[in-house]
Length: 142
Length: 201
Image 1: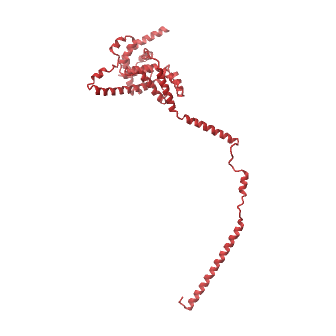
Image 2: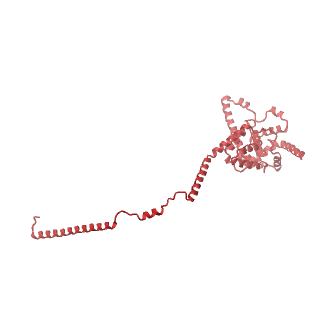
Image 3: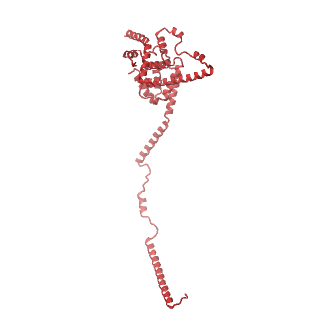
């Protein structure tokens, strides 16, 4: 059998809407039921919206940021860039020693070092001559 | 469009925005169809006021899950689930009691309240209203539920099928059988109703 609702049935149902409840003596919602539901709704709202404080914090933070921005725009905030006097002072700073004098002293030291090295070269030559002389004399005691 | 659609949407929107008073208006607005549904589904197997309150508590708890379909059918869905849970619990408890107290089970089953009206009440209820209640009580639960959802809440058959976890054809069959049994009473009701309206106009 094809389950179907006849159009007449639909019309009958529409005409008799509330068929079961129409003749029932339904009391109004008791006050304590309404109070319980109201309390539950308030609790649910509080539980579902714990971010309420965060929202206020964000609002306060945004206000503070805005005030600081306005103050900075008006030049009331301290400027952290160096002043012109300070920049000039940095350029003209005296290190406290004469680098030209230092250069001269280093040159003198290098000259002394070279003279000593030349002395050692001369000593080498003398030793070689002495060794040759001994070889020629045939003295093997050395 | 049902006549209940317009104010319900405003109150739902107001409640969502934090107006707790709108909840009271919703409760009152849907009181009659929801209470009638619960009363007829329980058939004396529990206090309808308790279930009514429980339905609304669940609705408040899960209000964010409600989407923009018919609000009353959502309430019916919650009531359907609560009543089924109650019946299951009751059945389990009865079974345990039967095992503990009366191994044969006959005494206790006989002492349980009858689902329909008692013979005494049936004889006393001669008027149409009581005959309607008796006829509704005599319907199987699933047929009565389809009939009530359709006539009290104008819930679409497709949605009733989703609530009952049945196919659309099954739901239509249930409605068909319910109508077969109620047709004489419905026609009488319809005649009275149309007579009253003719009289008014």
